[in-house]
Image (cartoon, rainbow, N blue to C red):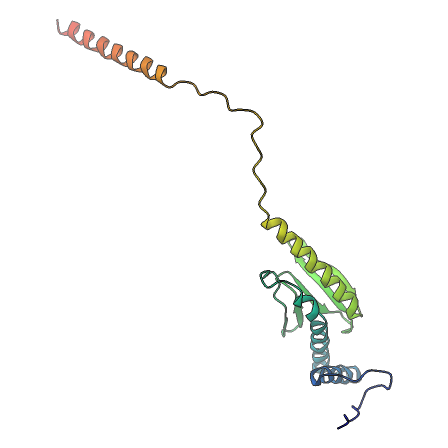
Length: 184
């Protein structure tokens, strides 16, 4: 059986392979044609989903034992594609530009900004690599430095003890002599 032509595609553009991709492209085209806020929000979510799908090969290469990244799209007032706890991607004011940002203790930093998904995928790839290197450095155990000089010999604790014992005995003898002389 031959596949039917999809309406709304350009002759030079390749056909969508999956129904999900076709639906996302249809939502974007519908949002481009209309100025309704709901459609714009759907277009934002659709573009973020397209970017999320473009990031699948990158996150497939991250080892399973590394749990730094928790990727997902939040459906709030401002849809966001979260990469990890502090980095996410939002759509710009024109709703077509991707903005990759990181929250720091000094405020929000824009790591990359582009209309092209490939540029954002490259920026996320660099970010993921830096985070994995930071994790390796944090997990590395540094060997203890070797002692350069030998420890000085310990002083004997015997003679201070003997001196304290003799001094205490002499003090008690002196107190006893004073007590006897007072009573006499």
